[in-house]
Image 1 (cartoon, one colour):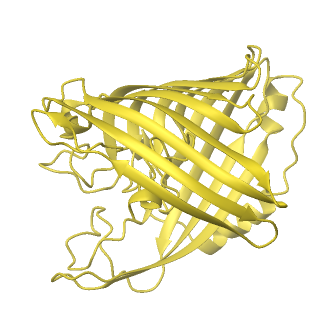
Image 2: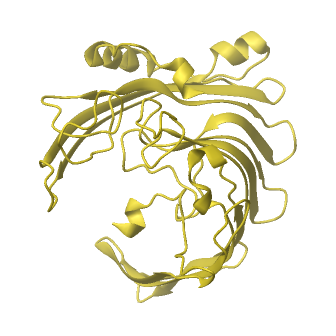
Length: 336
């Protein structure tokens, strides 16, 4: 759990940045034994400064959030196929904290919400195994991004990204094909482990930091066609009843096509996607809803890319007029 790794105080951003710069030059070398694997890995660093201003037509005060996030990670080399990765991050608000982050001690202050809470915690921590041909397995706290993040993403817009406690398997044995299968037990959401839950339950509510589940995901991507890649997927989301989000327990099946073609020295871009979703796994609202995406554009070489898209998250048929849901998506990239 991320909460087990949270520090009680935030370290100095300057001191951490200095350590990051020194550590960033660590070389990677082949592992001949376990000691080599543990000590001959690769250090990763990332520093991001972010400013957000929120103006809403309601009684809340306008929010202004200037935050800095530092990530430090270490990925071991592999020994007999086994490896590990750990990545910590710290987020600090700079200047006045004129925003509601929905974290404990940072909420109900009269400002609009900017979901960038101050926290120091583990962002990723997993074991990996690549000893099978063309296959990589990961178990633990990890980032998962599939296709365009419309269904499974990391919400990279926020400082504290969305990650998953999961077992994942990526296989590339078939020509031009990548198959990703996984089982997710918890969603580590952007509000951090120190987030505001509901009814005293930190794992429940719209602004909770974690959502427990037992969800199966499957994504198969084929790139053997010259004009396009085609993806088939199944996302079977089963939320724990304690989250209060069983309305998001659904089975979604879909197919996606994305490609490009040369046109007058530039590139014609196109994409199409269809999916169908129905209630499942304890979701008492009986419905079936469809998803449609059509996209066309042009990549003008050396200038810019222009696109026009048409996307519909349809209303369902059944006992309730319920809309198509994508609760694990990088939503800001699609819904504004």
